[in-house]
Image (cartoon, rainbow, N blue to C red; front, side, top):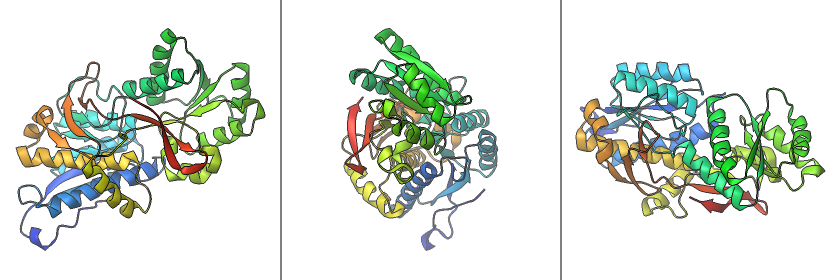
Length: 370
């Protein structure tokens, strides 16, 4: 585990910091590129908070822990960070990992603002300790299903691996598509090699294949197999979980990775703050920032406002979720209770279905919004 405090500067020498714990996947099998973008957003926001005077004159400090996509490791990190006296938790990308972190945060009475994880059931029971910026999976994946239906797709195959997150996705798609004339055909990737997926698609007359699998493998191998099979020249490959968002996807697949629609949580236009932060993130990452980087920035922006308004007392911070109102990079952030969701939720998170343009794979095309 590593600790990355934000540079305190000489002006903070005699003042204790306000600490935020950050959970980020920085090593495999975690989605390392997503973790790098998430951390870049978190760190940039901490730097800007401190440049503006910190939290009531005290520096904001980020204590970073690598979850490596391991729920047990994340839960242990939450316990350690609670002992170290953090005022709140931020971050995490992987839904199953965030769920473990949320459970420990709830049990310990530690406010947790989840940046990126979308699993609807982030906690087993309703809690006041946890809030979330990303949309619940049911909302995003139903918007994705609307996109498929609008494009004329009714026979939808899913290449799926065992996971609470993937199983939840399959259930959302099946429940939403069935009353609307759609059929979901599940392909168990424990039993199929990537090359065998092609025969299954042909036999089932599927017009769409959704990748509900790990990245880079087996997702990359599946895409290559399907792209090379002339029988499947017209099939749409989709990746609702967002695998094509990051540069690694394009580097591994080149043109084969284009025209694969995925979910992205950005508006058609960033706020004025967002436009400025996009430039700063691009410099920090030496690459175009993903929506995950903006999620990281917005997380700290919200927590900083909560801490300025209500102090570093954990209970008061958690009580403030419904009163928080922050202009973020992607819109005005407020939290509310959403039916079926156990945590405080930003209900108006922007959702897009986008893909990489086959003519220019570094450019994204907005196909659908919700």
